[in-house]
Image (cartoon, rainbow, N blue to C red; front, side, top):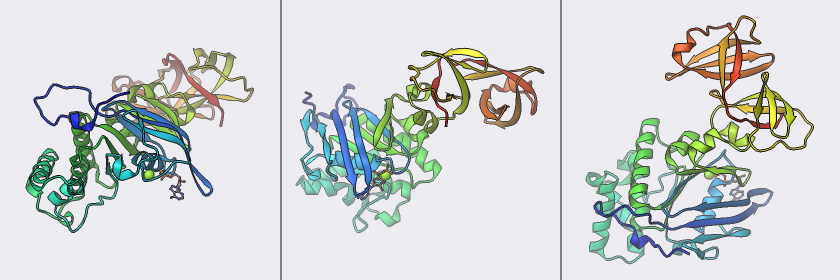
Length: 365
Ligand SMILES: Nc1ncnc2c1ncn2[C@@H]1O[C@H](COP(=O)(O)OP(=O)(O)O)[C@@H](O)[C@H]1O
Ligand SMILES: [Mg+2]
């Protein structure tokens, strides 16, 4: 059990970097609404100070999981642990969590400063201390000069920064963010993404960040939990998740994949495009048709007049060119460097080389 509490979180720049923050555990959560199962045995651990992104399509249960952690929703089964203590029955206002939502949800009749100070007033922090902390937080999010403005006088990005400052002002044990950037335009979104990550690291606050945007999840998080149908499909660091997805859902939800028919050789090998390649994990005993889920960088192509496939489309993507190659009725995406792409014009015949060390194989759809 860990005894770290939020009060040990340092806001002093000169303090030595230490791993603070509260450990969190969500254990086998279940939550049904009438006919819908929003959480179907969802488990997730957050290390002290860790930033975890909950990534998944709309309706997969992300918000419900976050609300159960916050205490706004009671699970039918399962438990919630913070700092080693079971808080499943503890009401939201006593869980010490800061929240930021997609809609800015600031108090419209309060200034930026008073919005940030609001939670401190509820906690009976003295006036002088409230002003000091609210001022410090507004400074931290770069809004010191906007302290007297009301929400309607602030841009969307500024309002979200006030919401972030308000969530952090109470020095919460856990920071919860539910699609906080989804309503913002691309440039502001990218800025705020960096700022959230910077503050989260600096304050070393355990953070759960909900998003349906894979780029956001992969670029910000220490680990990403991909959620599907109320369950965690895979929990891994971004690079691992991208390079070695363990389920077809993860492979196709995160990054680009082509499905290519393969022939089973044994429990651990399949034949793909004429090559025998190891399988990630193990093949089940099923007798149905199999497909490999292949990333654009898992294959290389060579020009070959007798090759079995034809380049039918080429897209310039800045750092490389993505080819779409027709192999019988299968369309395969392959990325190539620009210097080789000139030798690979539209309608050229090619053959393939498998460069991936192993392949994720799934039943054919
Ligand atoms: N209060 C509720 N009443 C009925 N159904 C709900 C309620 N909250 C969520 N749901 C349903 O539970 C499922 C998961 O919802 P949610 O957690 O909001 O998903 P996400 O945030 O991933 O989009 C959805 O099918 C949603 O319609
Ligand atoms: Mg949601």
